[in-house]
Amino acid sequence: MKRRPFIVALDGPSGAGKSTLARELSKRLGFLWVDTGAIYRCFGLAVWRAYGGGVGLLAQREGILSLLSALHMGFGEGGCRVFLNGEDVSEAIRKPEVSLLTSELSAWPEVRAALLGYQRTLALAASRGVILDGRDIGTVVFPDADLKFFITAVAEERARRRQRELAGQGIEKTVEEVFSEQGKRDRADSQRVFAPLRQAEGAHILDTSEQSLEQVIDGLEREVRRHWEKAQRDIRHFVE
Ligand code: DC
Image 1 (spheres, rainbow, N blue to C red):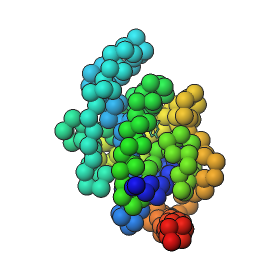
Image 2: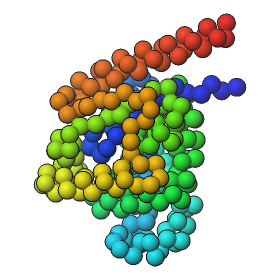
Image 3: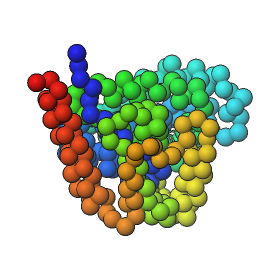
């Protein structure tokens, strides 16, 4: 019987550094990285292309939900490239309008239910370990994860980081604009009824405001390795 991979959950608000940490950590540890935000964003992009954003969304509910079954996603370069129905959408899913729409749609229970099984299946296919980053990994997707972290940073610092990231993608926005959009998204993600963003029981809190992400990664890597090696020793002990 295949053993379950070692599961690390990274939850937290947008801009806290989750994706950067998850990507770098997965590389260092040889783990799979599942960027669950990218999964929700693919759906957001598909809806944006079919319906646009804005007010009429609820009236189109049935049509929107029918897009879920036609969603074929793929990931390349260790999770860095994202494909939707064969097309590389890695940049398109990060556009601000897609971010806001995705946040809105991710509050719908049918959307969460449809994408939940996909996230679990993807993660459980990992051979050694898997790092998932999102909003509800430690609370809903894998409440029994081997290690859980809640990554956070003060809102101003998160907005500054996000603004730099967008500038790197050729999207010019002021920090104030990013701050305001981020606030909307934070409120929507943490006040929704289904699977809102909150700290999971047993999660270690990691505030990245004062440290560079490089510094945080080193500490995180040590912590994950320590638990992972212990889990492997426990399994060996159990088998022998
Ligand atoms: O992590 P991100 O910013 O790429 O996520 C985009 C949106 O997807 C976010 O506003 C909320 C939603 N999301 C979610 O509801 N649950 C997750 N596990 C991951 C993302």
